[in-house]
Image (tube, rainbow, N blue to C red; front, top):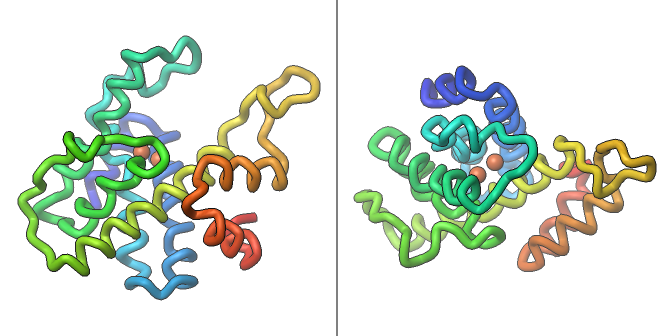
Length: 189
Ligand SMILES: [Fe+2]
Ligand SMILES: [Fe+2]
């Protein structure tokens, strides 16, 4: 997975996030039995690898993030799938969905033809792994990035466990039962 080494060179924070999502995905894989935990790790660890092609100015912008930055960032999904296909086809078919159900991109119309052929059942499995990777991705983002929304004294902080769980369900309503299971099983802390 040398692809991710390039991401590490470009932005350590994005690499660390990817490593955490990969490892948490393994726990989710063991819990669900949907696929080999290695498949979960690959999708988790490589889900943001397309950010190696994202303009650093947008990728690392701490304040003043605007629509042009969002457009630049949104490209990372298709870029990532194109980078890994050929070597990790199932990963490519899965990671393409990791923002689709909660962020809405890329739109169905903009979904690229990755040129990889799977049975319908495998396509669906890849999509589901991609969707649940999006849930783990979201969890990692809200529990590792400090935000002044949750602050009582104005300084950025992390949400409490209860606040995080509430946000997870609010932003991923289609997965609310699964999110509850992940909290109850201790996979989400
Ligand atoms: Fe992403
Ligand atoms: Fe991510």
